[in-house]
Length: 371
Image (cartoon, rainbow, N blue to C red; front, side, top):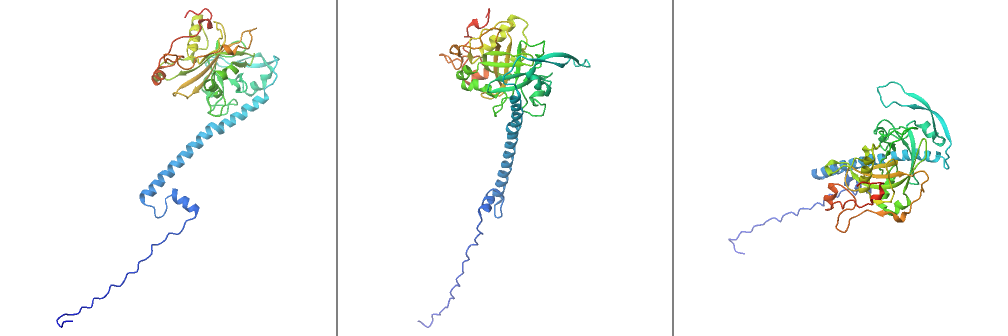
Protein backbone atom coordinates (compact mmCIF):
# COMPACT_ATOMS: atom_id res chain seq x y z
CA UNK A 1 0.00 0.00 0.00
CA UNK A 2 1.51 3.41 -0.87
CA UNK A 3 2.73 5.48 2.05
CA UNK A 4 0.75 8.57 1.10
CA UNK A 5 -2.55 6.66 1.08
CA UNK A 6 -4.47 6.93 4.35
CA UNK A 7 -6.44 4.09 5.59
CA UNK A 8 -9.95 4.93 6.68
CA UNK A 9 -11.79 2.57 8.99
CA UNK A 10 -15.53 3.04 8.34
CA UNK A 11 -17.61 1.48 11.08
CA UNK A 12 -20.22 -0.99 9.87
CA UNK A 13 -23.85 0.08 10.55
CA UNK A 14 -25.55 -1.72 13.35
CA UNK A 15 -28.44 -3.73 11.93
CA UNK A 16 -31.84 -2.53 13.14
CA UNK A 17 -33.95 -5.27 14.48
CA UNK A 18 -37.39 -5.13 12.89
CA UNK A 19 -40.36 -5.45 15.23
CA UNK A 20 -43.12 -7.78 14.30
CA UNK A 21 -46.50 -6.01 13.87
CA UNK A 22 -48.68 -6.21 16.95
CA UNK A 23 -51.27 -8.85 16.48
CA UNK A 24 -54.85 -8.14 17.43
CA UNK A 25 -56.45 -10.39 19.90
CA UNK A 26 -58.44 -12.99 18.06
CA UNK A 27 -62.19 -12.32 18.36
CA UNK A 28 -64.82 -14.86 19.16
CA UNK A 29 -67.88 -15.23 16.93
CA UNK A 30 -70.02 -12.91 19.07
CA UNK A 31 -67.39 -10.15 19.17
CA UNK A 32 -66.78 -10.55 15.46
CA UNK A 33 -70.49 -10.14 14.73
CA UNK A 34 -70.86 -7.12 17.03
CA UNK A 35 -67.77 -5.41 15.65
CA UNK A 36 -69.31 -5.69 12.20
CA UNK A 37 -72.44 -3.74 13.10
CA UNK A 38 -71.41 -1.55 16.07
CA UNK A 39 -68.75 1.17 16.32
CA UNK A 40 -65.60 -0.62 17.54
CA UNK A 41 -62.11 0.30 18.75
CA UNK A 42 -59.87 0.85 15.78
CA UNK A 43 -62.68 1.88 13.41
CA UNK A 44 -62.07 4.94 11.30
CA UNK A 45 -64.44 7.89 11.68
CA UNK A 46 -66.10 7.02 8.38
CA UNK A 47 -66.55 3.38 9.32
CA UNK A 48 -68.04 4.30 12.70
CA UNK A 49 -70.47 6.73 11.04
CA UNK A 50 -71.53 4.07 8.52
CA UNK A 51 -72.28 1.62 11.31
CA UNK A 52 -74.32 4.20 13.24
CA UNK A 53 -76.46 4.99 10.18
CA UNK A 54 -76.97 1.27 9.53
CA UNK A 55 -77.92 0.65 13.15
CA UNK A 56 -80.46 3.50 13.24
CA UNK A 57 -81.97 2.39 9.92
CA UNK A 58 -82.32 -1.19 11.20
CA UNK A 59 -84.08 -0.02 14.38
CA UNK A 60 -86.51 2.13 12.35
CA UNK A 61 -87.22 -0.78 9.98
CA UNK A 62 -87.94 -3.23 12.79
CA UNK A 63 -90.13 -0.68 14.58
CA UNK A 64 -92.18 -0.08 11.44
CA UNK A 65 -92.44 -3.83 10.88
CA UNK A 66 -93.71 -4.38 14.41
CA UNK A 67 -96.30 -1.61 14.01
CA UNK A 68 -97.57 -3.17 10.77
CA UNK A 69 -97.58 -6.64 12.31
CA UNK A 70 -99.53 -5.33 15.26
CA UNK A 71 -102.04 -3.57 12.98
CA UNK A 72 -102.59 -6.30 10.41
CA UNK A 73 -102.05 -9.47 12.43
CA UNK A 74 -102.22 -9.10 16.20
CA UNK A 75 -105.26 -6.82 16.18
CA UNK A 76 -106.92 -8.83 13.44
CA UNK A 77 -106.36 -12.03 15.40
CA UNK A 78 -108.28 -10.39 18.23
CA UNK A 79 -111.14 -9.57 15.85
CA UNK A 80 -111.00 -13.04 14.30
CA UNK A 81 -111.31 -14.69 17.69
CA UNK A 82 -114.30 -12.50 18.54
CA UNK A 83 -116.01 -13.17 15.20
CA UNK A 84 -115.27 -16.88 15.41
CA UNK A 85 -117.07 -16.99 18.71
CA UNK A 86 -120.13 -15.45 17.02
CA UNK A 87 -119.93 -17.90 14.13
CA UNK A 88 -119.94 -20.74 16.65
CA UNK A 89 -122.78 -19.10 18.51
CA UNK A 90 -124.90 -18.61 15.39
CA UNK A 91 -127.64 -21.21 14.98
CA UNK A 92 -126.56 -23.73 12.34
CA UNK A 93 -130.15 -24.60 11.37
CA UNK A 94 -132.03 -21.31 11.71
CA UNK A 95 -135.78 -21.13 11.75
CA UNK A 96 -138.18 -18.22 11.36
CA UNK A 97 -139.08 -18.31 15.05
CA UNK A 98 -139.47 -14.81 16.40
CA UNK A 99 -139.17 -13.12 19.73
CA UNK A 100 -140.44 -9.72 20.90
CA UNK A 101 -137.94 -7.24 22.32
CA UNK A 102 -138.17 -3.69 23.61
CA UNK A 103 -136.23 -1.65 21.06
CA UNK A 104 -135.14 1.97 21.18
CA UNK A 105 -136.39 4.04 18.27
CA UNK A 106 -133.61 6.60 17.86
CA UNK A 107 -134.64 9.95 16.50
CA UNK A 108 -132.89 11.05 13.30
CA UNK A 109 -132.91 14.60 14.62
CA UNK A 110 -130.26 14.79 17.32
CA UNK A 111 -131.68 18.09 18.53
CA UNK A 112 -134.79 16.32 19.81
CA UNK A 113 -134.12 15.08 23.35
CA UNK A 114 -135.11 11.57 24.37
CA UNK A 115 -135.75 8.37 22.46
CA UNK A 116 -138.94 6.35 22.32
CA UNK A 117 -139.16 2.59 22.82
CA UNK A 118 -141.41 0.08 21.14
CA UNK A 119 -142.09 -3.66 21.03
CA UNK A 120 -140.50 -5.19 17.93
CA UNK A 121 -140.39 -8.77 16.66
CA UNK A 122 -136.96 -10.05 15.64
CA UNK A 123 -135.57 -13.41 14.52
CA UNK A 124 -134.98 -15.39 17.69
CA UNK A 125 -131.56 -16.76 16.71
CA UNK A 126 -130.16 -13.22 16.39
CA UNK A 127 -131.20 -12.11 19.87
CA UNK A 128 -127.74 -12.83 21.42
CA UNK A 129 -126.08 -10.53 18.86
CA UNK A 130 -128.56 -7.73 19.49
CA UNK A 131 -128.06 -8.09 23.24
CA UNK A 132 -124.29 -7.81 22.76
CA UNK A 133 -124.59 -4.70 20.61
CA UNK A 134 -127.84 -2.84 19.95
CA UNK A 135 -126.32 -1.50 16.71
CA UNK A 136 -126.57 -5.02 15.25
CA UNK A 137 -128.82 -5.00 12.17
CA UNK A 138 -127.95 -8.23 10.36
CA UNK A 139 -125.61 -11.02 9.35
CA UNK A 140 -123.66 -11.12 6.06
CA UNK A 141 -122.58 -14.48 4.66
CA UNK A 142 -120.81 -15.87 1.61
CA UNK A 143 -120.02 -19.24 3.08
CA UNK A 144 -117.30 -20.06 4.00
CA UNK A 145 -115.44 -16.89 3.05
CA UNK A 146 -117.46 -14.22 4.85
CA UNK A 147 -119.48 -14.81 8.01
CA UNK A 148 -119.89 -11.71 10.15
CA UNK A 149 -122.39 -9.59 12.05
CA UNK A 150 -123.30 -6.24 10.53
CA UNK A 151 -123.87 -3.05 12.51
CA UNK A 152 -125.27 0.38 11.72
CA UNK A 153 -125.06 3.68 13.55
CA UNK A 154 -125.61 7.35 12.69
CA UNK A 155 -122.29 7.81 10.85
CA UNK A 156 -119.83 5.95 8.63
CA UNK A 157 -116.76 6.58 10.79
CA UNK A 158 -117.22 4.86 14.15
CA UNK A 159 -117.12 1.24 12.97
CA UNK A 160 -114.13 1.89 10.74
CA UNK A 161 -112.17 1.94 14.00
CA UNK A 162 -114.19 -0.22 16.40
CA UNK A 163 -115.01 -3.90 16.66
CA UNK A 164 -118.46 -5.43 16.92
CA UNK A 165 -118.08 -5.25 20.69
CA UNK A 166 -117.18 -1.55 20.35
CA UNK A 167 -113.55 -2.03 21.31
CA UNK A 168 -111.09 0.41 19.66
CA UNK A 169 -109.41 -1.31 16.71
CA UNK A 170 -108.49 0.20 13.33
CA UNK A 171 -109.50 -3.02 11.60
CA UNK A 172 -113.09 -2.12 12.46
CA UNK A 173 -116.01 -4.36 11.56
CA UNK A 174 -118.58 -4.64 8.74
CA UNK A 175 -121.20 -1.90 8.85
CA UNK A 176 -124.15 -0.57 6.85
CA UNK A 177 -124.19 2.94 5.44
CA UNK A 178 -126.03 5.24 7.82
CA UNK A 179 -127.98 6.87 4.96
CA UNK A 180 -130.15 3.76 4.46
CA UNK A 181 -131.72 2.82 7.77
CA UNK A 182 -132.44 -0.87 8.39
CA UNK A 183 -135.34 -1.27 10.81
CA UNK A 184 -138.40 -3.44 11.26
CA UNK A 185 -140.41 -1.07 9.05
CA UNK A 186 -137.78 0.56 6.85
CA UNK A 187 -135.11 -0.62 4.44
CA UNK A 188 -133.27 1.22 1.62
CA UNK A 189 -133.53 0.30 -2.03
CA UNK A 190 -129.77 -0.31 -2.00
CA UNK A 191 -128.24 -1.73 1.19
CA UNK A 192 -124.65 -0.49 1.26
CA UNK A 193 -122.19 -2.51 3.37
CA UNK A 194 -118.55 -1.58 4.03
CA UNK A 195 -115.67 -3.71 5.27
CA UNK A 196 -111.88 -3.43 5.33
CA UNK A 197 -109.70 -5.40 2.90
CA UNK A 198 -107.08 -7.00 5.19
CA UNK A 199 -104.08 -9.17 4.26
CA UNK A 200 -105.24 -11.69 6.85
CA UNK A 201 -108.25 -12.67 4.69
CA UNK A 202 -110.87 -11.29 7.05
CA UNK A 203 -113.82 -8.91 6.65
CA UNK A 204 -114.28 -8.10 2.94
CA UNK A 205 -110.85 -9.27 1.75
CA UNK A 206 -112.39 -12.46 0.20
CA UNK A 207 -114.17 -10.23 -2.34
CA UNK A 208 -110.77 -9.98 -4.06
CA UNK A 209 -111.22 -13.61 -5.17
CA UNK A 210 -113.75 -12.42 -7.75
CA UNK A 211 -111.09 -10.27 -9.37
CA UNK A 212 -108.14 -12.65 -8.93
CA UNK A 213 -109.80 -16.00 -9.69
CA UNK A 214 -112.39 -14.73 -12.10
CA UNK A 215 -115.26 -16.67 -13.59
CA UNK A 216 -114.48 -19.94 -11.82
CA UNK A 217 -114.91 -18.33 -8.40
CA UNK A 218 -118.06 -16.46 -9.42
CA UNK A 219 -119.72 -19.62 -10.74
CA UNK A 220 -119.38 -21.18 -7.30
CA UNK A 221 -120.24 -18.05 -5.31
CA UNK A 222 -122.94 -16.03 -7.07
CA UNK A 223 -125.29 -15.70 -4.08
CA UNK A 224 -124.94 -13.25 -1.17
CA UNK A 225 -126.92 -13.96 1.99
CA UNK A 226 -127.84 -11.04 4.18
CA UNK A 227 -130.22 -11.68 7.04
CA UNK A 228 -131.47 -8.55 8.74
CA UNK A 229 -132.49 -8.69 12.36
CA UNK A 230 -136.03 -9.11 11.06
CA UNK A 231 -135.93 -11.38 7.98
CA UNK A 232 -133.77 -13.61 5.76
CA UNK A 233 -132.66 -12.60 2.28
CA UNK A 234 -130.60 -13.86 -0.65
CA UNK A 235 -129.19 -11.82 -3.53
CA UNK A 236 -127.93 -12.80 -7.00
CA UNK A 237 -124.68 -11.08 -7.92
CA UNK A 238 -125.10 -9.03 -11.12
CA UNK A 239 -122.06 -6.71 -11.11
CA UNK A 240 -118.45 -6.80 -9.86
CA UNK A 241 -116.27 -3.80 -10.61
CA UNK A 242 -113.28 -1.64 -9.69
CA UNK A 243 -113.83 2.09 -9.49
CA UNK A 244 -111.78 5.19 -8.86
CA UNK A 245 -112.40 7.59 -5.94
CA UNK A 246 -109.65 10.12 -6.75
CA UNK A 247 -110.64 12.97 -9.07
CA UNK A 248 -106.99 13.36 -10.13
CA UNK A 249 -107.29 9.95 -11.81
CA UNK A 250 -110.37 10.90 -13.78
CA UNK A 251 -114.08 10.13 -13.50
CA UNK A 252 -115.36 9.20 -10.05
CA UNK A 253 -118.42 6.95 -9.94
CA UNK A 254 -119.88 7.78 -6.53
CA UNK A 255 -121.91 4.59 -6.15
CA UNK A 256 -121.87 5.13 -2.37
CA UNK A 257 -124.21 8.12 -2.60
CA UNK A 258 -127.21 6.15 -3.84
CA UNK A 259 -129.16 4.15 -1.29
CA UNK A 260 -132.68 4.94 -2.53
CA UNK A 261 -134.20 5.46 -5.98
CA UNK A 262 -136.83 8.14 -6.59
CA UNK A 263 -137.79 7.00 -10.07
CA UNK A 264 -137.36 4.25 -12.66
CA UNK A 265 -135.01 6.42 -14.71
CA UNK A 266 -132.77 6.97 -11.68
CA UNK A 267 -132.73 3.23 -10.94
CA UNK A 268 -132.04 2.33 -14.58
CA UNK A 269 -129.24 4.88 -14.92
CA UNK A 270 -127.53 3.71 -11.73
CA UNK A 271 -127.74 0.01 -12.56
CA UNK A 272 -126.57 0.65 -16.14
CA UNK A 273 -123.43 2.37 -14.80
CA UNK A 274 -122.75 -0.66 -12.60
CA UNK A 275 -123.16 -3.03 -15.55
CA UNK A 276 -120.88 -0.87 -17.73
CA UNK A 277 -118.06 -1.43 -15.24
CA UNK A 278 -118.63 -5.10 -14.47
CA UNK A 279 -116.03 -7.84 -14.93
CA UNK A 280 -118.82 -10.35 -15.58
CA UNK A 281 -122.49 -10.64 -16.52
CA UNK A 282 -124.60 -13.25 -14.78
CA UNK A 283 -127.70 -12.50 -16.88
CA UNK A 284 -129.75 -11.33 -13.90
CA UNK A 285 -132.72 -9.20 -14.92
CA UNK A 286 -133.36 -6.05 -12.92
CA UNK A 287 -136.36 -3.77 -12.62
CA UNK A 288 -137.32 -0.69 -10.68
CA UNK A 289 -138.51 -1.80 -7.25
CA UNK A 290 -135.93 -4.58 -6.85
CA UNK A 291 -133.89 -4.41 -3.66
CA UNK A 292 -130.13 -4.22 -4.21
CA UNK A 293 -127.17 -4.94 -1.96
CA UNK A 294 -123.70 -3.44 -2.42
CA UNK A 295 -120.52 -4.74 -0.76
CA UNK A 296 -117.67 -2.23 -0.84
CA UNK A 297 -113.99 -2.53 0.13
CA UNK A 298 -110.65 -0.89 -0.64
CA UNK A 299 -108.47 -2.22 -3.46
CA UNK A 300 -104.78 -1.52 -4.09
CA UNK A 301 -104.18 -3.67 -7.18
CA UNK A 302 -103.77 -0.80 -9.67
CA UNK A 303 -103.90 2.68 -8.15
CA UNK A 304 -104.44 4.20 -4.74
CA UNK A 305 -107.98 5.16 -3.76
CA UNK A 306 -109.65 2.29 -5.62
CA UNK A 307 -112.77 0.43 -4.50
CA UNK A 308 -113.79 -3.13 -5.28
CA UNK A 309 -117.57 -3.40 -5.42
CA UNK A 310 -119.82 -6.47 -5.55
CA UNK A 311 -123.53 -5.90 -6.18
CA UNK A 312 -126.54 -8.18 -5.95
CA UNK A 313 -130.27 -8.14 -6.63
CA UNK A 314 -132.60 -9.69 -4.08
CA UNK A 315 -134.04 -13.07 -5.03
CA UNK A 316 -137.73 -12.47 -5.60
CA UNK A 317 -140.48 -14.48 -3.86
CA UNK A 318 -140.92 -17.81 -5.64
CA UNK A 319 -137.81 -17.28 -7.82
CA UNK A 320 -135.45 -20.23 -8.29
CA UNK A 321 -132.37 -19.44 -6.14
CA UNK A 322 -130.05 -21.24 -8.57
CA UNK A 323 -128.61 -19.93 -11.84
CA UNK A 324 -127.27 -21.57 -14.99
CA UNK A 325 -123.59 -20.68 -14.57
CA UNK A 326 -122.75 -21.75 -18.13
CA UNK A 327 -124.54 -18.60 -19.32
CA UNK A 328 -122.32 -16.23 -17.35
CA UNK A 329 -120.35 -13.87 -19.62
CA UNK A 330 -116.74 -12.82 -19.09
CA UNK A 331 -116.28 -9.09 -19.67
CA UNK A 332 -112.62 -8.85 -18.64
CA UNK A 333 -109.71 -7.86 -20.85
CA UNK A 334 -109.74 -6.06 -24.21
CA UNK A 335 -111.60 -6.42 -27.48
CA UNK A 336 -110.07 -7.08 -30.91
CA UNK A 337 -109.32 -3.36 -31.37
CA UNK A 338 -107.44 -3.21 -28.08
CA UNK A 339 -110.16 -1.31 -26.22
CA UNK A 340 -110.94 -2.30 -22.62
CA UNK A 341 -114.32 -3.99 -22.36
CA UNK A 342 -115.41 -2.54 -19.03
CA UNK A 343 -115.71 1.15 -18.25
CA UNK A 344 -112.76 2.49 -16.25
CA UNK A 345 -111.26 6.02 -15.85
CA UNK A 346 -108.64 8.34 -17.35
CA UNK A 347 -105.59 7.12 -15.42
CA UNK A 348 -106.33 3.53 -16.42
CA UNK A 349 -106.85 4.39 -20.10
CA UNK A 350 -103.58 6.33 -20.12
CA UNK A 351 -101.59 3.59 -18.39
CA UNK A 352 -102.79 0.89 -20.79
CA UNK A 353 -102.99 3.09 -23.90
CA UNK A 354 -106.62 2.14 -24.43
CA UNK A 355 -110.17 3.44 -24.20
CA UNK A 356 -113.55 2.00 -23.27
CA UNK A 357 -115.06 -0.23 -25.95
CA UNK A 358 -118.54 1.07 -25.10
CA UNK A 359 -121.73 -0.47 -23.76
CA UNK A 360 -122.12 -4.07 -24.99
CA UNK A 361 -124.38 -5.80 -22.46
CA UNK A 362 -127.87 -6.96 -23.40
CA UNK A 363 -130.49 -4.25 -22.80
CA UNK A 364 -132.82 -7.02 -21.56
CA UNK A 365 -130.83 -7.06 -18.31
CA UNK A 366 -132.92 -3.99 -17.28
CA UNK A 367 -136.67 -4.20 -17.78
CA UNK A 368 -137.92 -1.66 -20.35
CA UNK A 369 -134.50 -0.05 -20.53
CA UNK A 370 -134.57 3.09 -22.65
CA UNK A 371 -130.79 3.23 -23.16
